[in-house]
Length: 243
Image 1 (cartoon, rainbow, N blue to C red):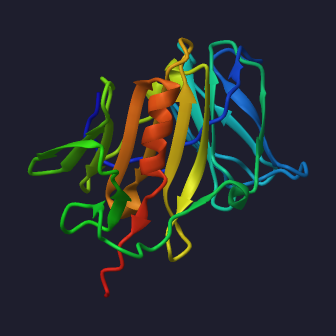
Image 2 (cartoon, rainbow, N blue to C red):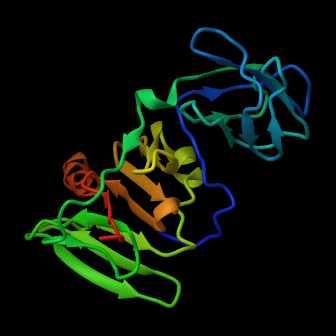
């Protein structure tokens, strides 16, 4: 289950809570604050409407909330967050944490001996020798399907300028989920790493690197398979093309 989409929303966020309904019909309002309780202005909120918090950290999303939806909160310097909100939700009090507490810093690749990356892309991974690798190439993308013996599932490694995981559906299916930002060698945010668990205990992860034109994703896998796939995703590094 994978699709190619334009990167209209590079940041996406998550957390665990599911909220249920609110003061005025057809509105979702609330306040966004820092860990020390200071209101945060200028937070971008993506939902059925896109809004920004005012100087006092307050927001109001108009129009009826007719079904369960994901609401994203994002501002540079803070860990992004997403909440699953149901019709009838109480006013939200959203706390954003310092982004660098959990950020994933992608290193520069030190070697290319057993790493793999399609020609022309900067994102690279270390693939174990005992892994099965199937390569698929199209005009807009390249994909590697990585699997191990006895596993029916695969880790999908994608490269291409229009590749994006589109995590909303995965979040809505999850009993729990979390996210961290990904920072490149120059220090800026190049993507987001999201993972969660469905009510039946299956695990998913979507590490999106739009700044490096890549994505790594698996879904509906066991804890054992997730551990094996995570070892590969966590070896991600950025090629130094200047060498």
